[in-house]
Image 1 (cartoon, rainbow, N blue to C red):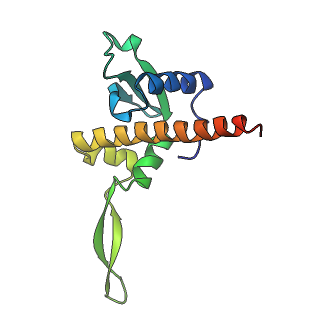
Image 2: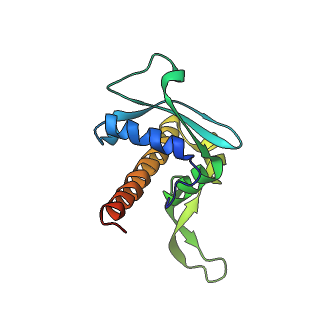
Length: 145
């Protein structure tokens, strides 16, 4: 995920505050709850060292379902390494075998653990991108560029 343009600047700023309050430790940032509909994956985030009493107190991050599907596919969560047979030459070869389309896999094929891994991979991707782009932007600003 190269850009966070799908996240409003306000949410990106709030994510920065959450990252700083967690002392840049991804493991401290947890998904308190989630919801997936046809348009978006919604994550309610909190610092494990500062649990919230209600979801209203958590940081809400809404991710377009297309971004979530792209991450599932990019991380090969909906596929496995297997062997295929060429239809005409009858030779076998190693290939990625897709279990199902990304969101269909998430809803119908993934275990609860795999679903959690997918949501956590999405969160980690967002946090990593935010830190990498934010750090680069800060570095460019520091050098006057």
